Image 1 (cartoon, rainbow over the protein chains, first blue to last red):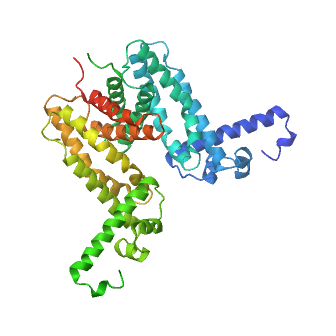
Image 2: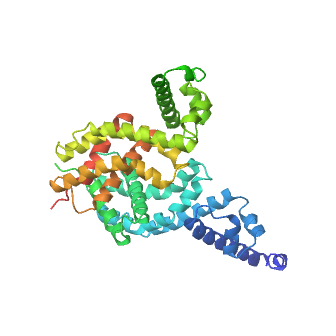
Image 3: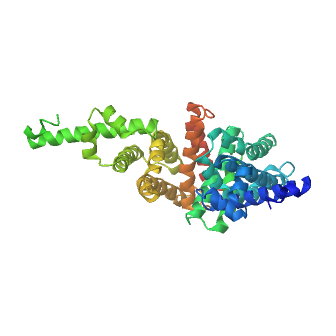
Length: 199
Length: 199
């Protein structure tokens, strides 16, 4: 395919490249989610492309991980965007957000662990930025509407959202939370954390 | 000191060894808390003992880290034992527990990060076991007394205790929580998480 590429009209070559990139990102996401130490050679093999092709698109493991995280965050963002996050009453929107996002965040948790070994902390924070802003906007709206407490800092409440999802995913992995318990436990925990203090 | 040890009566030699061990553990705790990658050579130097003496007591970095964690957990346990954890009303005891333990847990957080690179996960869990049981006992008592919610699993509530302390310490480190905010934020967060659901 690579050898005949020069004879193809430009749009076809571009389509090949895009197909390869998509296959590499999908394979990398799958392999790195299962094992943070998955090798670039294994990823190329699973994507059905040669290592030369892979390195042509992603010159280093770092570049590949960066692209995989971008891709993962795009997927997460699309899921979050699907929510009536800006219109439903804040507690309802929060329950929906947890329901739709915890699995994506859990699926990508190992990706961030893999990235943690390679990318700088600040670069990882940047990747978290968009999902983080959606959560922050929702909690801020709940605070304005009187649905959520205002006696704890907004940034802290956003932190607990991610921290609690992270813990629940780990507890499920350790077998201390049944798969079907995760969702109701997360929603109950987060809503009692956010509800205005009595009196 | 090592060269003259053979001439000293046994109790004096034993006292020397105990002094050295105490100095090594104190230095290791201090250095590893500041930098998880601190070297054994630096720890020996800070403890004022030779590397041969250090390796005589702790034959490997793993053995040293194991002893340092044991020591840290003893300190944490002593702090927790000081609380009226079994007598005061559960919410009050929980506030006291957070107040007295979060700094110890924060101080030792990097030790666990350092250990994470060297010791097996199960060994690290064992070290957590005693403090974990105290927290579990307190939350179970609060549930029995009707002070704490029973609609979430006990193990999950214990997990959130550690997860939230961990998050607050990280937020303080990142400068997103002021040092004086940590305690009230932790207490407020944990007590609203534990309080029985309304209605």
